[in-house]
Image (cartoon, rainbow, N blue to C red; front, top):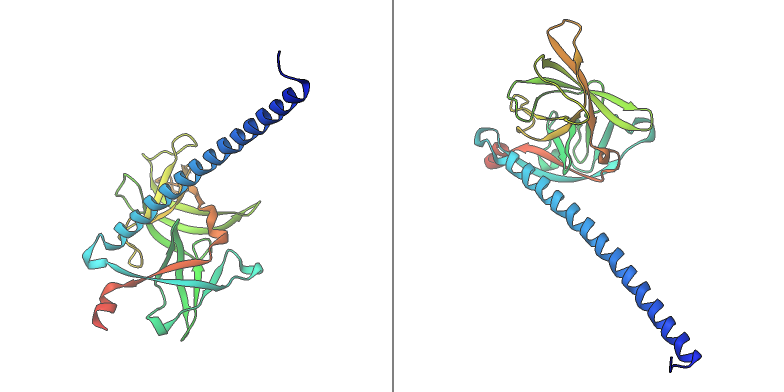
Amino acid sequence: MSDSKKTLIEKAKTNSRIESDLSLQKDRFKTLEREERRLRDLKERIAGLKNALSMDAENSFKPVVSRISLRTLNGWWQGIRLRKGRDVGFEKGMGVIFKGGVVGRISEVGRKSSEVQLLTHPNFRIAARFVGDDRPVTFQGNGILPGGKAQGLVMDVPQDLFASREKPLTLTTSSLGANFPEGIPIGKVFGLEGGEDGLFKIGQVALNEELGSILEVTVLTPASEFQSQ
């Protein structure tokens, strides 16, 4: 009550600035928390990929990183071109991955460039398995859904497996696929239906959303080739 009107106005302004600063600090703290969770998840995914690459001594791979040099609009979900080729040991059929999982496989190789067939391409097929189940299934590319969501199909799924939105199945590569080590993520399956033959199920595979914006990939070159050089 002893403060003047002018003093009270100044104190109110000061309190307002303090409250505004506290609000900004809270928002910044929440942003840092989200970034920390994102980096932790990325670290775990990369560690998982590294373990998969060196898990089997007989089928170990030497990862070679390459930038993407071309991705055309009319073939966005069909293929990409890399800036490396035979000059670093790339060969047709080699598997290609990124931090989120499978990208595709090399389909053509030049001296200093390579073409990659993406896993969304209808001609892309690979042996796969579900996490927690050793039985092999088949993955095939299936283009994109309306809205640009990449998808694939999983076939030859045993009848006793079930998937739902609440309990999806995680599809990964199988050791039966010679171009990929076991355990590389492919996508999620949120539902399965009975196959036409009545023996196996089939389902859509939701692929990693980052596939549409990757700028760099890793090519899996058999380690034995590097050891012999």
